[in-house]
Length: 247
Image (tube, rainbow, N blue to C red; front, side):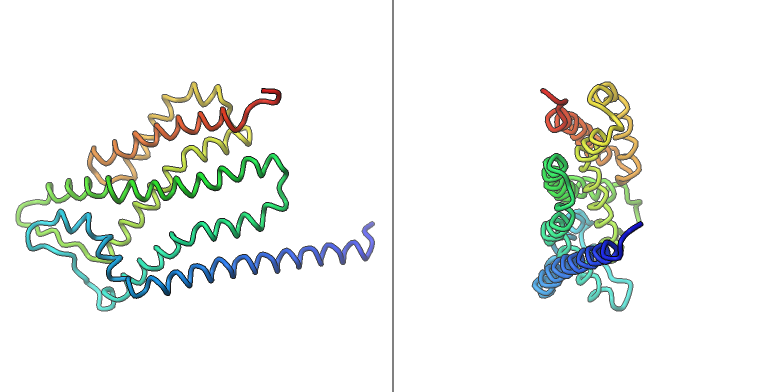
């Protein structure tokens, strides 16, 4: 039977954890807010840069349009908020790490730190890959297959939603090495299974790419091939980070 002071200590510990969690959330939120306030004056310029891959491939005289009354004002602000989250992500992940790390064992911290850093860098790499390589190729294809007599003029809000979806999808797909290491760490797979399952990984990569990318073969290959290479990187990371005891 628990003593009354034990119950009080447990409640006090839970309360202190909740206070710390609130403090971490407030710090992360303040960081996002400050970055957003700094970006608001540049919201239109940010949208111009985001729209560049499409605008450069529109037919002569074509341009983006706004079909809603408030979208010329609201859409750039939405983009500024997304960029603020993007820039603030290191601070957000640091606050998350600072909250959970005291409860981890030493070997868990040894594995979690590189995975956390790698997941952030890989997500950024996926977004950059989509912006600089995939979107220009996709828009070039879409502009080329537009039927004669149809003018390609995209709504600014729909364009933002499409690009953000592509960024999120490519960012997640680039997390393949992290996912591989986590699956191996929890015992779902081992190094031998990962090496023998390469053919399935290749099929899976092309299947995922076919669903995510725009309907052109170039974009699909441009996602599937990096995913296959990232799978191999994940296999190497498993061999390095999850060495058997005594090795």
